[in-house]
Length: 301
Image (cartoon, rainbow, N blue to C red; front, side):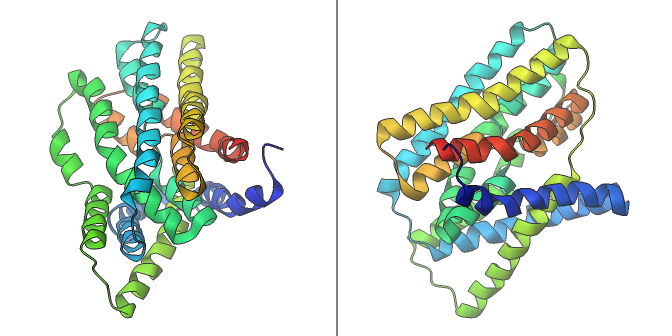
């Protein structure tokens, strides 16, 4: 069967936290200020600690990690190329430029949570390497498409990205053989535990399911969702079999390719004068659909 009971049970707590976050936002009326603060805490403190801690604890075998990175990069490149096909649909140029990033950008929070649920610290470390190396090209491609509609210090933002900085620091510490004292590892472990829970709650709190617009807009949205949730993981699965990739590296590469678009895509579209409403809908619809598609793709492997 494509999805077995053990796999579904392993991923259920992570997706349940997303749904809980969505429910809490609506039931407790905490307001945008609370959720914005929570997202900043996760983005700037908790997830960097999770990434750094995971990379410090696990020895990286670069020779075996290289095929995983190649698969992830090829899948994302395929998403970038296929996403360009939406330009031929009857939507405005600004709407296309805004939604284009949803064909290849990825939600790191969900990726790290799922990889950690399936493989523990080694899964988090492997996903951390993929995330750290794939964030810069993904961000640059997204901004390049939106650049004609606004201005932003893109390179500076990428270089200051806390997830990238934490990944680079963790890799450097790993290669340098740094051994942290037990108390420091426990501290990072506590922050990492909080990162998974609060990060997924924040993803749920950011869901915005509203109408996507007219027929043409629905068609474009459907196209971008197919590229992100079907084409990208299909490319990854094919390459995994070509390379003979297995174990944690195969799972991480496939999980990465199957992730929904990141919530930061909405922030970028808003900041650069894009079609934020359409992007918000795509992120939300993709996140909900990925609760079914990620276990399906993992089952197919």
